[in-house]
Amino acid sequence: MPKLNVLISGSTGYIGIQLIKLLVKHRYVKIKYLCGNSSVGKKISYFDKSLIDKKLPKIVKFNKKYLNEIDIIFTALPNGEAQEISNYLKKNNVLIDLAADFRLKKASEYYKWYKQKHKSIQNIKKSIYSLPEISKQEVKKFNIIACPGCYPTSILLPLIPLVQKKMIQLKNIIIDSKSGYSGAGRGVHKKYKDQNLYESISAYGVGFHRHNSEIGQTLKEYSNKKIEFNFTPHLTPMFRGILSTIYVEVNKNVSQNKIKKVLENYYKNDIFIKILKNDTLISTNDVINTNKCHISVCKTKYKNKLIILSTIDNLIKGGSGQGIQNMNLKFGFPLKTGLI
Image (cartoon, helix red, strand yellow):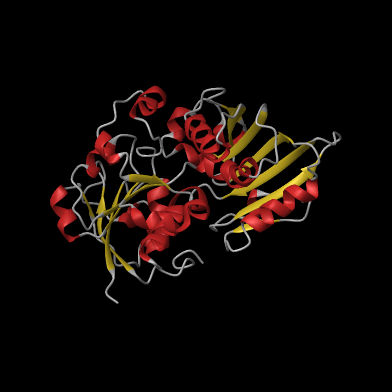
């Protein structure tokens, strides 16, 4: 079959580079355009030497006329820019956004959390927030696909089955997440230059991080009730990976084994989700450079409380890999293509 033409806008950031590395191995697509702003005219190998032998186009400034030649647009841009591109989409274009432009279902919520007016309100209803293991074939109905944030991916994968099956209390869920500094983008080095980024851990966005919005929105959708949770993210002195530690109170007659069983049954056909033995102490090292999510259910000294550990690679399962997984679902490609 002929290859689908791909345009990547925001190709030089950490997510964009990782996306290119995966797509060059994908047998059903061809990278037609790489787009940027300050990087126009440069080769992508300037930003990552491992791409020097790949036949890739030089970086150009995005032009809407390119969409006439393109099947799939991946956007890894500052918030608001994918919304503008969505206004130029042709009938045959599929937009897969790796930023936050279509994650929230209400323009008012987007303004509340991102302090920007939505530039494509008419396209919100034409988009889907797609965590691939959850949305599955539903993604085929949409030409605008919003990929979840990296933190929410690590948090929602273990929690959605449990709130949907009424296994846990919906009040006072505590979520403590730690990420490699690549999750904050290339600008992190300047932002934290006086804070010893490479030898310290930093809490940020305490109580009001933007990802609260999509976590709350999605958990409410699957529980039909408002969820009370506290989410605190941290930057750690490692380049990539996320480990989320989630503290929950179980409902009456719900045991550690029942929680594990629900998760196993929910994801039994999902090749990228692995539910480990109870009380397994997991590490980001187990999932680095993969599209996998590992989940472990751990007991505590209190019978009615459990700790759930969840780990992903923020640049792959929490970003570019998830985008490709959504693309594979959308176009009916084998799910592993480009990801293993």
